[in-house]
Each structure stands twice: as C-alpha cells, then as structure tokens.
Length: 402
Image 1: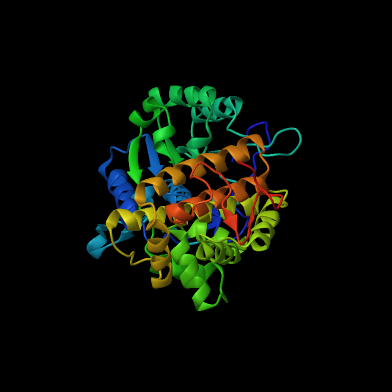
Image 2: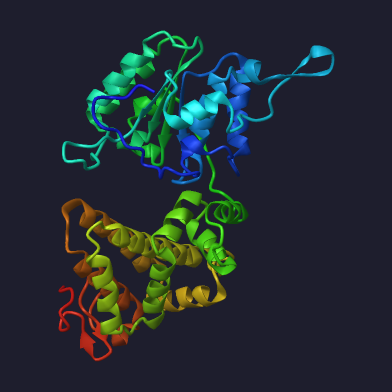
C-alpha cells in the first residue's frame, strides 16, 4: 500500500477487531447486499459514502468490499454451478488465508490507499487529514492498477478532512479516473461539503442489535461476566466499537459512579463528587474524561427520550427508568433538553480549549442538581448557581463557581 510522506498510523488497535483484519461482518447484511448488487450490475458507482454511528462496521465493510473487488468480484469468486453455470457470491467475504486478504491486512496491496490523520513532527496525531496527503493519494489513483483490476481509496474518516483537503478530494470525485473506487467513511455526513455528498452514492449502516453486540463482545473479549456483557451492549447503543472502548477503558466503573451520583440528586455528596471529578480530571490523556462525559450525555439523552415518549424505555432498567422520571418531575422535559445541549457544547469546548476538567464536571453536576430540586428547595437556578451538597455548596468546598 502506498503511503503519504507524513507518518500515518492506524486509528484501530492492531488486533483481530481492526477493520483491515476483520473477516466477519455482523448485522450489516443489507448494506453488503447493496454493494453486491451494484458490482453485479456492471454499473458500479465510483464513489460511496458509508454513513452511520461510530463502531457499527463502516470501515470493516469498506475493507471487505475492497478485498472482494481485488479478488475479482463476482467473476473472481464464482463457484461453478450445475453444468458449469456460475453461482453468484452471496456475500463479500474472503477467507483470512486468501492471498488478497493477507495482503490487505498487512498493508501490502499495491492498489489500495488509505487516507487517515497522520502524525506531526512531534509524533502526535494531527487534528485533520492534511491536504498534501490527499493530493498524494489522488496521484496514485491516476496510475494504472498494478494488478489489472481496481485502484481503491478508503478515507477513514471523511469527517477529518479540513476545507482544503475536502476541496482537493472533491476534484477526484468530480473527475474520477477509470477503474478507481473511493470509499468514504463518515460518522457525521451532515458536516461534509454538500458537493462531496452529492457526488457519492450514500449507503447507511444501521446500529447493531444488542444481541449482535453481545455476540461480538463474546468473540473479542472472552471471559467477560455475562452481566457486564449485557450492560456493555446496553451502553453501546448499537456500536460494537463503543462497547469495546467501554470494556477497555473502565467504562462500566465510570457508569456505576455516575449513576450513584445521579441517584442522590437533588442532594450531592461533596466528597464523592470531588473524588469522581478529580479522577477524571487528573487523567492527562483525557480518555477518562471523554468516556465519562460521553456516558453522562448518553444517559441524559435516554432520559429526555423517556420523557418525550411519556413512558419507560424498554432498553433501560426499571430502576434507571424510575430515576429518570423522578429527576424530570420538578421541571419537566424542556429544561433538561436545554441542559443536555448546553453540556454537550461545554464538554466539547473543554477538550478544544483545555478547560479545567474537574471544574467542568463539578459545574455539570450542579446544573443537574438545580433542575432536580423542587422549585421551593432550589439553592440556585439552572444557569449554574451552586445548590446544596449535604450542607455545603460545591463552591464553598473548593469546586466550580457560578
């Protein structure tokens, strides 16, 4: 595989679940059938936009399709049927011992190019895909396929393109070379240039069923207790990538601590809250903060959904459903929706401009405390004034200030 001048790491772990190494794709048979039908039609679109939540198999499908085309597509994989008639393949699958599979997995296929964020001079991951990397990749697409088939470019993900690199990619989408395929992966297609979206055939991948997430967890993380597997599948929201991340980053423990704090509302244990915020704040990598805040935002979204549907959620335990109803009772749905949007922006800004993570978390729980308290008992408003924390305010205890 040709590489750009900048160092380009794989964002996936170098193990069995990395998309380029994954032989199985679970829960996306519909999307796979669309690609099969397009290839069989003889009118294969040159550019595809694979969309859907993170961790549902978009990159796995892209590599799976690339391997299928490199192996000759339907013509190369047909098994002779009765009287020599061709039986068209029913999937894109190649066996892991197939030469094409091994070469794609090792990064050694000369007709495959992958665009990802590279490393800067200090060895840190860049914020976006550099325009020079896009131009280098485009140059390889104009070359004659080394093995007489297709030249394929996988962009993982197109969300990481900046304006310059997006415009550079747009040129190849407007005038694609013969025998070239572009597979763009996007978690948030609404943020892409409309001209990029309009020049790709969009293929949406759906969230996985909880049973599929559990099956994949059993395969990739054998030995997890059944209860943990079920909880991870619940928190994953249809994403095996999210489930694996939570399993590997202590997400279950963080979730338990957050539910414990939420369960005390409108009261807050100052020591417990400070300990939790301190733990997430002192992680210099920011991974614990990201995991904890993503879980908190996700839980608030489930609570809002419960309120909008005016009934318990089947995907949430009876205890959590009861907690959601209790927290919303004093103020109703609208203030919690506004707070969910506000905290989402606050957490994103914390990462972008390096705000004090501990103070941000303390302020977030104060906001929730203010909404959970009956109006006659509120020590402040939903704009962020410190409420009571078992006899103290967080501000008085060294925490966040209004």
